[in-house]
Image 1 (tube, helix red, strand yellow):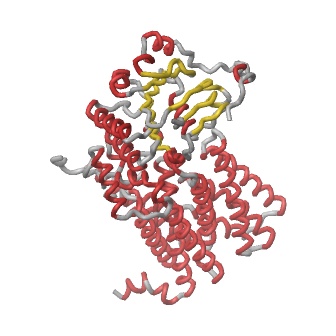
Image 2: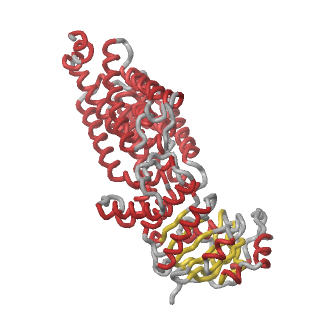
Image 3: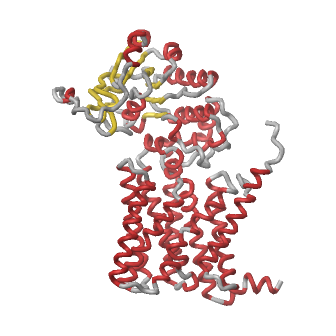
Length: 291
Length: 252
């Protein structure tokens, strides 16, 4: 009993930085996981990943202009992300080009632009912080920004929920009854960017999308209903965050990868044993029913 | 009586190539109009033009004072993501959009209306099923249930009876007739000539342009159908700008 307490709870009661990390990762889970569910349902999981790359140069520019300054980097990331999201959204709606193709085009441009700027100014090792984040070094400001963004995400998502769902299922129908489809889609892309920027403080740009997509994948194997999926995604993101922090504390694994690896474990378990279409269920479905 | 829908020299198309060429005509309020013609004749394009998804290249479509969002439009089934985890109840409930908007809740009246619509299409008991578990015919039935809830005065159905068994199609034709007796204007793109002859008083035979438009018996003659079949489907990439537009006065 005591060893369990030492392993699972003591790190958080004894060390403030662990408590901050836990608070941060819970807030990230709350905002990011529902966004991940919609990314998955819209078949945009990889678009989320592309967007994460698009943010990197913006954050790097912010970093180069004013050092390891939270607001400069957040601002730079937001601008780069929004620019790519909005431009690609507008291009795919106004032309024949599909969203994935136009997004790929714009994020590659953004990435090339970022690397060019970085190489002009000379690279810096602290950039690793941007790439991989550091959830164990959360100051008050960062925590507040993360909590604010998570709150904003949930509120905005509640406002655009209905058009967003209909836009996913039957976009032509939504267009025939309302003009809200386009704005809802753009606002959703903005939320994706906000949550990716949110994630890079803790997990870095490369892994930020992990705490959005993996929980969504997990949820798909346990629920066939969108509300259930969102709840399960949030819960599994929170559990992964907590378990990852414990793992990282007890071993030498860096915190960001530890969190994502924990999510990956749950994901693997869900793929195998999930009640909604898991592999085991498919192989051994039980005897067929009467009707 | 002023027309419900009127087409003034309407040309609809994609990338400057016309799919429906110089359409003129009117649909009276309460009309029950079948739109027939071979594949590629421009039936779907015409419907997309009516609901505002495709903008006319030239000419104008007037809706008799209706907002384009007051038209109930049933597109071909291919546009729907049936893997999305939404229940039949919620899906059909989206038909109440004009009533609830983005935020309006579903009270008891709305819930009853949804259940009644499901009963009207013979799918009582399907409320909790996700749409991915439905057969093609059942899916078409819930699309009709949604149109029922939209309670629109103009209803546009794009090939509503394709790949559907006789029983389902008979049930759904019953709904179309009910809308007709309720004085709603109904347009349907169809391929089944027997069905058109049996249930649709008025027919528009389309083959990129109007071949014939009027009483069904006069439109569906072997002569007219033959002319429609000979329609040229391919776009001509070297086509000149249409000369037909220049001298004609633009309709307001």
